[in-house]
Amino acid sequence: MNTRRKPTMEDVAKASGVSYSTVERVLNGRGGVARDKEARVLEWARKLKMDRALDEVSVRWLRIAIVTQKPDSPYYVALRHGFELAQKSFETYRVMCQLTFFDDLEPKSLARVVERAAQKADAMIVVAYEHPVVVDTLSRVARKMPLVTIASDLPDTGRLAYVGIDNRCAGRTAGELMGRFLGDAGGQVLVIAGLRTYLGHEERDGAFRSVLRSRFPACEVVATVESREDAASTERLTRDAFKRYPALRGIYNLSVGDEGIARALKALKREHTTTLIGHELTAISRALLAEGVMDAVLDQSPFVEAVRAVEVILAHYNRGAPASLPLQTPMSIYLQANLPPATA
Image 1 (tube, rainbow, N blue to C red):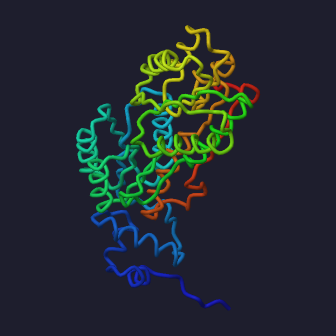
Image 2: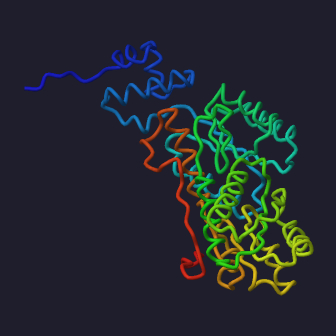
Image 3: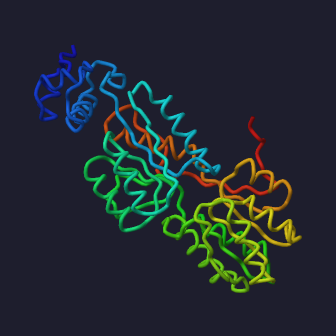
């Protein structure tokens, strides 16, 4: 006969190092408990396998501040939709995703946006570039709450986790594709970055150059120019590049603005003689692939990145079931030949 007794609130209190009343407040959803204690109570209640629906305990709302650029480009639109889905999907765990957008790339301005967003938050998810002012501000945030970087990492901030693709792998893949598309003849190649202070953009650029240098020496990267995340500027940058390098044969756009590049190529009658590789499968890049203007698109599923980042925060606070998705999100390669059906 099994005489093993069920764990009690006293057991949880002893294991988590808090008082009985603290355990009672947490497990009965009465609030008034510090975040770190609340997380320990829930963690030990699960470990001790208390006989209650711990995943549905009505603890107080968890406020996640999400700081990104305004959703003007398809990537940030998909990211916003991902956070909206996460808000709905994880509502039973009492989580609020509070989006804050910045459109000024000046470091002090971004730092102020981060500071304001952190004032009423329990955690932060951020897409930001690397600059001493920005890193310092985010480091101070990370000492107060869990910080998750997404899409482009900031490892020196003390962040809890990075969620996104391996950007070096993305750059190497783009280099391999470019080298194979240009063939033995090789030729001059232009790289268009958003901001090279985004670590992800710098990693893509460096890895792309490395593959061409080692495996396709007939290919020469003549310049890396910055769009400053302004999609409209890529047309001008492309036109200027052809003026400087009339023999240009390839363009790797590792950020926004495929449509601007396409307009310039069509105007110059170079759309079918220039290899164009970009990122993110959107309505625009899909159409350009179908037309044959783009040759390949590397997609990193920003929708998945957003949901996974919220799961990381929930896991830190011991809310919800353990996440099953990896922190490194998958990357897909799309060509004209394997375009999936467009969704409505």
